[in-house]
Length: 221
Length: 276
Ligand SMILES: Nc1ncnc2c1ncn2[C@@H]1O[C@H](COP(=O)(O)OP(=O)(O)O)[C@@H](O)[C@H]1O
Ligand SMILES: [Mg+2]
Image 1: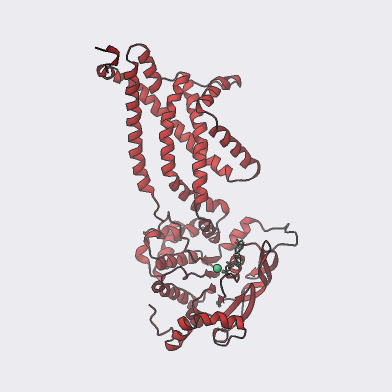
Image 2: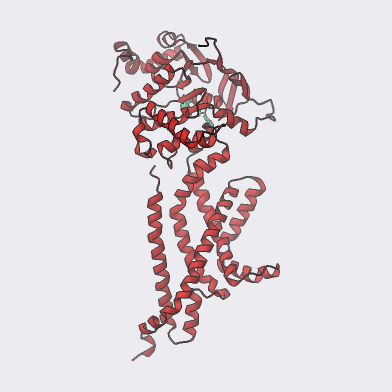
């Protein structure tokens, strides 16, 4: 009867293999951007616990990147970096833009968990003769990292969703692929249902993995 | 044995304030090698602050503290000249401290808690196998050999505190500072910790002990100091200070322990008495 309300499952199944490279691309972006963001976040968090120019630089960076839309940052990197003579592939630009913002998010998670490690823990380290940086390294950071696992896990799941924005600068990840396939057919609704399911499955797998990591590293206090 | 009364800790005219609050007022204190000094005093009298000054965890405005005849930290009037953090940390490594709240590192096993200092912090690093061997010997000494691989949170308070003592001893300190180390424990766990401390005292460790356990003061202390409102109000041998208090402040303070502690001690001296 009403042709365009029919759900064309067959079409989705036929084009599912086309999503293989797209998923692989999204996973690469996810893994690279997460890794860079985590490391960058550690530096930012430590800088934000410091003093003077280091503190102000880190704070300025974090506030700037937390309070502007990621899409704007991606465009800024894509169109802005070449102006400064920096030419990166869309893929690299996307990874760096994601890492730049999520680094700020990780920094805030970690700053919170560092500050929530009891002051007596640091004191116990100092009383053993540790230098302040040793107390940070051996006593505070290991506890802060473990405490940060649940929130960081959520952050990585959000990062997966943000990989969709990289489609806007022409990276053939999941969303861009869906756009392209949708343009070629009348089945755009089906396409976006399909990628919704794909994102859901990847997120689900990530969440299961994260629960495992969480329980393996939980500190009972 | 060297019988000279070597001074391990020497405190002269120590003053310490938090803002307007003058917490320590002209403290003079000598602790000789192998001596056990027990500090008593009501809450807020400055006992913790004094220990923290001895360990340079707290800075002070006036006075001098020598440890083994070496001036550890000082500040002139405008506090311009400070000792470098690294030197302070170096000297602090030779002063063990045990806290009321244990403060074991929860992410490390008992053994890892103990060897962290010797392998990573001690001015002369100890190789891991050797540190492990020493740690096991210490665990044996505090009666917790079988807990080497346990995490702190799986232990009772008394066990955690004994591990904390072993952790401090692993640094081979010249002095041990104890800050109300049994106050957070259930009564039935107090004895096991005090016994470890008694043994330590018998082995000749120099100790400064803040405690409300009058038993311990009577049978382990060489000297008892009563701190009152930031001043040393009375000091002397335990029997003199605890049984013949001079000031009304100390009499009031001790009265609070009379029923609980002193009377029971008179009935059954702690040597024979099984604590429970
Ligand atoms: N970090 C601090 N800042 C401000 N006041 C403090 C601080 N530490 C201790 N004090 C104050 O110093 C006084 C002595 O404290 P403390 O040495 O802990 O006493 P005690 O251990 O004998 O109970 C108290 O009045 C306490 O409130
Ligand atoms: Mg105290």
